[in-house]
Structure formats: structure tokens, C-alpha cells
Length: 457
Image (tube, rainbow, N blue to C red):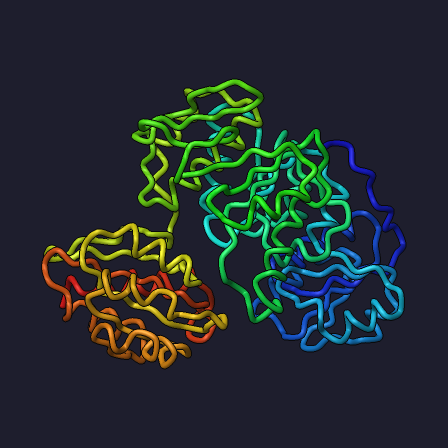
């Protein structure tokens, strides 16, 4: 959607909650439009000096090391970064005082003049947004990749020249406080158990994800997963033109596979978009991501040849089923981004050799027992790390040999000792990383470092 009515924040007092990357860029955008900004964080950022340098010379004050409720209740507007829970006391107090509270996604949208493709889902968001972005670049369409990644939406709006299309990776957290956010094309890849420590249950989580379609109209396009048994039901509330995708069956209307061809049927017509053989990515889950991607490209009316060239060249992203090395006939795979049980399931299904699995970390109140059959059939040995190691051992300890490790380096050494030629050592934790690592990237880098050090031992 183009031509959004901009907010007038000139002279207004605005609190931005959260001083990480997204909050910093929201504060910058606000200040450039004349707001009097307070950047508030419950902690003191490790890179505090860097944060202050980025906002030097702008009308931004800092409240770090604890939120001040008075700042929230006397503001004209509060903007939440994705990592800030909306239930914290200062936010509740602001709402009680009648202060508007919105997400950074909603705030930035008010200033967006580019066409928007928004992609959400429990798994596959980054792969799919990256692939859509690369397809647009191959088609020579000025585009920018932003959102829940390295480039916050607010920052993308300050890039010159303005891109024709912004491809947004969108999380459920970002969607919680939207009011008008309306992407021209919205994609929901999947909804599986995740972040249940933040939501009251799966239905609450699903509702948050479905909000990506909330303000679309019949001139927009909604792309949904037909293989999710709940999605047809949920789609009844969607007003946009609906385009489903499926890796399991042909669809009367949507994107699917037939005899190795990827087909789209829409408005009574049928068109071949690509061949399955064109796809360099591994695994059924990535086939689903590609079908959703091609659905978005069909809605954007992109030419076929650039799509096929990009599919052949795109081999995935770091920390997502990333091949590290083959050592003495054993393959090592880094899937550190696999932070929930659905991601672990997809990883195990995509590997057809015995797996030495390294898993564990900070759990998300998931029921690991749903993977018992898959672990029994695919996993040769389980090496556990982190806070949820006891829960995972309780779920799988009677099925496969289990050991625990105090560090990721120790876990790699144990896995290597247990592996024989033809096996795969897989890091796919099914948990968040924050108990032992800065983030999933840090965990993945430590895994790769530990694996590569094995060569010299």
C-alpha cells in the first residue's frame, strides 16, 4: 500500500521501550520528525556507548537500567520494540492513563511509501524473506530486506533512494500492537508451538500471527499454508484475495507441485512457475518456503526466468541447516536457528542417515514427547546441553543413548566420538540460546568453531 498518512509527532513526548537495534532506529526516525524522545530499557545495553553515538545530536534522552513508569504515563505516545513484553507495569500504567501504545512495526508503517511484502510464520521467515528479496533483485526491481532482522523497518524508511518494494520479516511480537498495518502481500508460512512462555496457548499465538492479514482488503493478497489444518478455518476472516500453497496435494486455487512442476492456479488459469529440480535448498520444509515465495512473486507479477535462476543459486542461510564440513565420513550440520520443536522435526525429516543430535537450551514450555517416534527412528545418540537438558532426557532417554555436556565444545567432542562413517552430527537445539549464548548466531558460530577444531585433534 502506498501513500500512508504520516503521524505528526513534532513536539510530542514519545517513549521508545527497548534500546536494542529496533528501538534505536525507531528513536532516530522519531527524532528526525521532531519528536522529543526518551529511549528506555530495563537493562543497560552492553553497547551503551555505541547506542549513544548513533543518536548523538538528536533530541533523544536515555533511561537505561530500569523503566520509569512516570515517563510512560506522561508521554504522548509509547512505542514498543519487539522484545519488550506489553504486559510490563509501565506499559500497563500508560494504557490505564490513556496513552496510545503501538509497536515499532505500526509506527514505521505510518511513514512507509514503498510497496510492502510481509512474511511471518513460526519457521522459515528469514529464508523466505531473503529468497523473495533475491528474486526481486534478479528481476531488477529496487527492493530492500527489513523487519525482524539486521535492518529494522524504521531504518529502512531512511534509506535513499526509496526502494520500490520492502520485504519485511515480521514476528508475532511485532504484530501484537498494530492498528493500520496493511501489506500489499502478506504471507503466513506456518504456525507451530513456539513462544508459549509469552502467550496463553496455541490459539492466542495463532491469533497473533493471523494479525498480519487484519487490515488487508480485497485489493491485497494473502498467502497461506493449505497443509496447516487450522488455516482454512482461520482464513475465513481474511478479506484479501487468498492464495494457498501446498506440498502435499494439488489445489483448485493456489501453488502446488504436479509431476515435478510448481504450478499456480488462480482465477481459472494455470501457469508453471518453476521445476522442483530448480530448487537448491534441502528439505520438504524448504519446498514449502519456495512455494510461498513463488506465490508472492506471482502476486507481484515477476517474470519466470529470473525466478528459476535464483532458485538454482540460492543454497540457504547461515545457521539454518548449514553444511559445515565432512570429517572422516561424518557430516556436520549447523541448524542453530532451530529454536523450537517444529524446526527440529523438519531438520530430522530432511536427513536420511543416522543422526547424532546435539539439542537443548532455554525451553519454551514445549512438549518434547511429540517427537518421540521421530527421535526413535532417526536419532542414533542424543547429546544434551542447557537448561532443558533434563526435560529432553526425560522425553527421550528410554529411546536412545543420552549424554549431557557442560559446553557446546564438549558436546561436539562427545558427538564426534559417537559418530561413525555415514552418520550426521546435527546441532538443532529446539530451544532458545539465551541460557548459554548471546543469541542463536553465537551458538552456531561456536558450534562451527568446535567442529573445525576437531580437524587438528
